[in-house]
Amino acid sequence: MFKKFEEKDSISSIQQLKSSVQKGIRAKLLEAYPKLETHIDLILPKKDSYRIAKCHDHIELLLNGTGEQVFFRHRDGPWMPTLRLLHKFPYFVTMQQVDKGAIRFVLSGANVMCPGLTSPGASMTPAEKSTVVAIMAEGKEHALAIGLLTLSTEDILKVNKGIGIETYHFLNDGLWKSKPIK
Amino acid sequence: MTNESTNAAERLKLGPREGVTYPVVMKYCGHCSMPIEYCEYYPEYEKCKEWLERNLPDDFERLKIEEEQASADGTDDDKKRQKRGGKGLLRVKKKEDVPKRICVSRAARGKKKSVTVVTGLSTFDIDLKVAAKFFGTKFACGSSVTGDDEIVIQGDVKDELFDVIPDKWAEIDEDVIEDLGDLKR
Image (cartoon, rainbow over all chains, first blue to last red; front, side):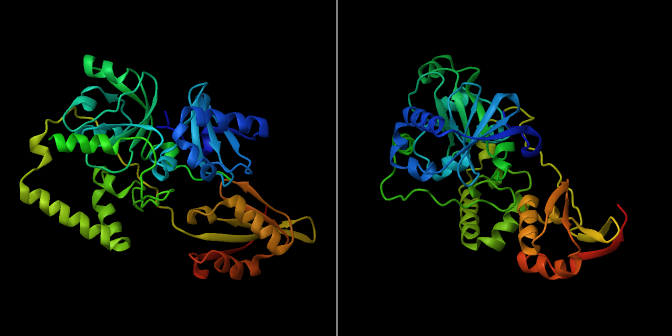
C-alpha cells in the first residue's frame, strides 16, 4: 500500500482533530488492541492534540503531538500501528512468524503466502480472518511488516496455498521512510 | 524441535514482557534505516556493514561472530532451503548526489529595499519550514519558504547569514556557503 508513498506528493491535507473525535479514536484503538491499555498514554497522551493526514488512495495517518505517524488506516478499515511504533511497543498486535525464505519477499512488499506461514521455520498464533497482524521472522527479533489476515489461521493450515496475509506496511516502504510531519 | 516451536509460541504471545521497559529503544542502521538484523536483506549490505563498523562496533563484532559460526557449522541457508521465485530482490534507488552547497544572494525589491534568498538548505536535510521560522525570529523580519529549496528573508541579512547558519546547524561549514552577490528578480 505504501510502496509508492511519498510524503510530499501523497499527503493532501492535514487536519487538527476535535477532542471528541480524538476520544473516539482512542476508544476504538483500545477496543482493537486491549493490551495497549497500560501504555497508550505514552503513545497518545490524553492532553495532546493529534492530527490526521489525509493521503491519496483513501489512506489516513494519525499523527501524535510531535508529528510522528503512529497509526494508519485504509478507508474505514481498522487502525494499524506503524512499524516504528510497533518496534517500540511490540506486544499489542497478534504476531505471526514467517520462515527465513519469505523475508526478502515481504521486504519488497509481497503479500505473505500460506506456505511461508506453515513451514517448519514459521509459527502462527490462532487468529480470525481480517485481524491485524504483525509479521515477524524466523530468527529475528523485530517485526518486518504489518498486514491483515485474508484467511483465518485455521484455514491457512488447511488450504496452504495462495495469500495468507495481505501486507500493508513493511520495512523501507514509503511510510517507513517518511519523516515526522510538523 | 519441540523446544524450538514452544520458543516461537512464547515469543509471539501478546502482552508486555516482564523485565522490559517500554518504549523499547531501537537501533536502526544508518545506511538502510532498518533494524540491524534485517541489514543482510538489503542489496547494499556491504555499505550497511561499513556503517555498522563505524558507528556500532559492538553489534558489528557480534554479527561477525555469528556469521563465522554459521559458515563453520556448514548450515548455509542457501543450500539447505529451496529458493522461491526470482524477482523478489529489492532494488535500491540511486540516491542523487547533489553537491552540498548553500547559496545566499540579495535581490532588490523596489528602489531601496531588498530581500535575501537562501537556497540549498535542503541538501543538508534541514526542514525548510523550521529554518524559515528560525530566520524570521532571528532577524525579526518576514521569512518564508518560496520554492522547492528556497527561503526568502525580507531585508538584507546576507552578511549575518554566514555566521548564523553554521552556528545553528553545526554540520554546515562556513566554506560551503556561497555568496552569489546581487541577483535580479
